[in-house]
Each structure stands twice: as C-alpha cells, then as structure tokens.
Image (cartoon, rainbow, N blue to C red):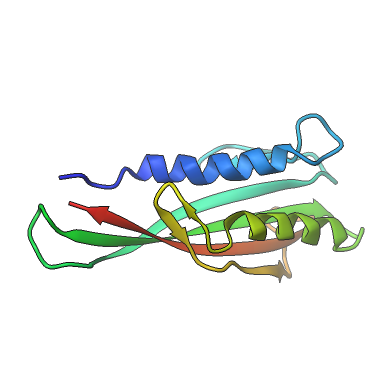
Length: 145
C-alpha cells in the first residue's frame, strides 16, 4: 500500500510559502511565517503570516481493495496575513497577491490546488492590534494504493 505521506504534503506547501516570503523584502529575514503548533509572540507593528494546513475528507476514486485502487484526500491551506494597523491595506494586499499567485491552480508534488479564496478582511484580528486578511486554498491529493 502506497499511502500518502501527510508530512511530505505539508512540508512541500510550507517550503513554497516560506521561500516566497523570504524574498522581495527590505529586511534580510523576509516576512516571518508561523506554522501549526509553533509558539510565536509577534513584535507590535510588524508584518508576519500564519500558515495552517488541514486535511479533510477522503473518498474512493476507483473501486477496489487495499491495493490497485485510488482515493482522493481533500485539504485546505489557510494563510493569515498580519500587517500594522492604521497604515492602510496596501502592504497586506500586496502580500496576499503574492500568496494567491503562489498556489493558484498549480500542481505541486502531486497536490492539485484550486483557485484561492480571498483575501478576506477580518474585522477582529487574532492577535489584536493588526490589520488581518485571510487567504484560503483548497487542494486535493490522489492516493494510489
């Protein structure tokens, strides 16, 4: 059985985002990207992103048993973009466009991404004190057993 390795999928998605956000910024370190289950206390008035990857439902694509068949696994990438409050939306929406372009209808290591949703402006930022938007990109992976 050649089951999908969820950590391989996760790391491919995260590496692509982290590589993009390390480039094209005045500071040497780029835009910090925080992933699931990592502690982070942002400095006020800084720009940073949070990437959350969730795996969802699975379905049969072909009939068969534990071998010689195909399943699909759905998931979603959620990227929260945080920029300084009361300075306009320009920087935030510029980052959002870069992220949209990064995953828009591509195939990455066997992961098929749908068109992105957003950026959606969130009325209340978590944590507070930032202008926050959110991009969501659903994806599917086909698992050959």
